[in-house]
Image (cartoon, rainbow, N blue to C red; front, top):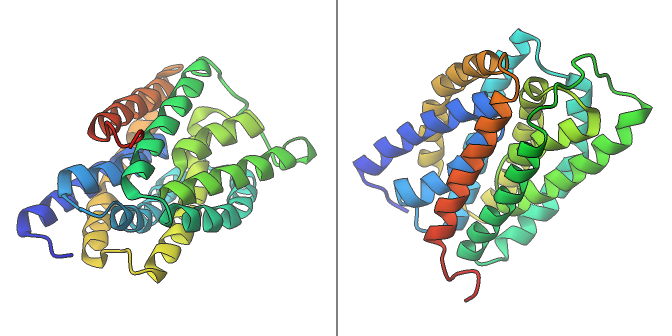
Length: 262
């Protein structure tokens, strides 16, 4: 696929926005990446948009992880168990996703986003336990939620942070800020797994991926800083996360009207 100069500029700007939101709310960046590639940059094949965004989001998530690590907000052991259990799920999910019509995949993606947003709003007042550790009481939950998040993230071709963040909170009871920082480990792992599967089928636009990555590096640092500031206001970070999900989902459903019932 050949893009013009304007599309490449839009790709770099979109990458900056994705990186910022990744640092801010963990998985929001991966939610935005596919719609931006399809509706703003103009990538015609949804599968190429999905494969390319998976690679870009994985790299930008790793960049954002560094900022959260320095701030001490990452629960490494809990997140590592979650990520490891989800890699197999991401492999299976991405294989199934490639076999489904791209437009229907986008519409289904939007429906799942709305459900997750509602669940997150229900927990927005929760403070969480910042001292949580990996143990017998949460290891099984981390494995189960990790496998499920990996399957969904691979199927929809995203980093999966919008599932990983609530999954980590549900499995361990950790605060939202810790879930955001810790989720980036799994976002990166699932993104690389999904991107590798799509790359095998030739469904990645490499120049576009590079622009998204470069644009996202600066954005992720700014997003991580904003995330720490918003976390000081009870429920604010969760509310921002949910509103973002609803807005993007509504737009995707509007653009995909009729596809679900075709």
